[in-house]
Length: 299
Image (cartoon, rainbow, N blue to C red):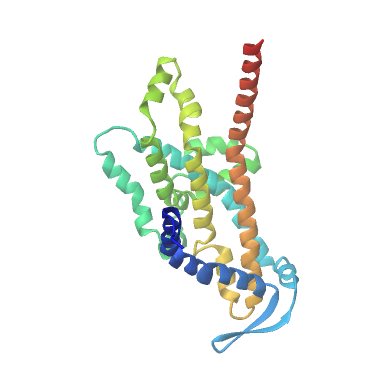
């Protein structure tokens, strides 16, 4: 039976990606399923192999929430992520807008912002953190910051303290997001901005109604990328707890990892939902407006 051209293209395409599919199954899907199984077992690590002792069902998960150090580390992770992710997005948009300006020597500044991507590693940031250099010198005692904190409630003050105490690591993680925002800004059609300027739109209106909606798909990618980067960061408390107990309580550490994944995934869905909520409302309003105009035209 002679193969058509379309079938040959499908065959060549699947043969081309077959190595990746095989690698995905062997090195990703199979270990994930195995980890889920181990999280519900009592597992002993003997010489070079894993020995399943007995089935515990969800006992490891119940025990994980009674382990005070893990619960505290999980809460610290949630609290810091709620502050870090929006800060990364805001700084990435601001830096992207600044680096998109036409000025002399802008290429040097773009290179500086990309340097953290080149030298980004756990040991480097761990060393910076151990030296107590996670805050910009003199920033905590600045007059304007003290003025803001004196006029805000304690809840917001705690958030501001947490933000500025992690400002270095937040700026460190904005390297790739800034490059993504910059690439998105450079792909925008300048004719749209010229038309908005002719209609009398201010720079503030142009940003909120043209620039930010156009950058929303990239912001979604930045949120996903930043969540993954923070979750697997080597100096995190949860990673340290998992690493310290993986040889003695292997099943429990797998339960730790799955709880961490579930919390991270839930937070990711919340972030993406908040970002795209306005898009859905705008589409609904446009649809209603279109139906109203159509009824008026018919009448």
